[in-house]
Length: 165
Ligand code: ADP
Image (tube, rainbow, N blue to C red):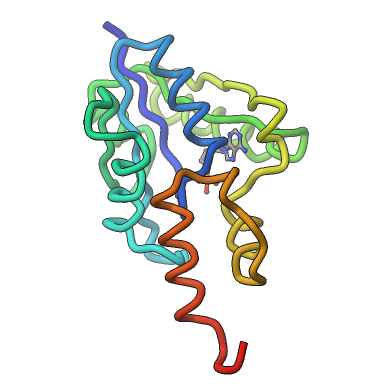
């Protein structure tokens, strides 16, 4: 059975991520989503909150595991007994960075292979950062994220909005 890890920030998870998770689940025997906790990065949601939102979005019956991790994705893969790192590819803009990262990861651990899944048409322009921006300005995000995430985003961004808005 091949285990795949799907590492990322997921700040927060959206339909583009869920689509990649579902397709990875159809391909690999076991999928573990890894929520990166990078101390140098500022997130809207804490690692625990991002894990909880992923779990709520996947549902209690999902066979997909979700854990947070710190450090290198190849080390997280090794800890989980995974031989595959899944990454989602949107457009050409993702390619440069992803290409570099996958080559570095192969150098760090040649036994771990990076597999890219291309996004579905509907999600090409979907990103967590754009979602946060749209939501902060009161735009409708409900079709782009699962209900628990829409609720959490509105709650978090409303409490952050300056008085009077
Ligand atoms: P990171 O900071 O690691 O890029 P993200 O949470 O933004 O974390 O993304 C995690 C993974 O999901 C990455 O492989 C990214 O390319 C992929 N991804 C992000 N948005 C989409 C999308 N709309 N469709 C498919 N894959 C996506």
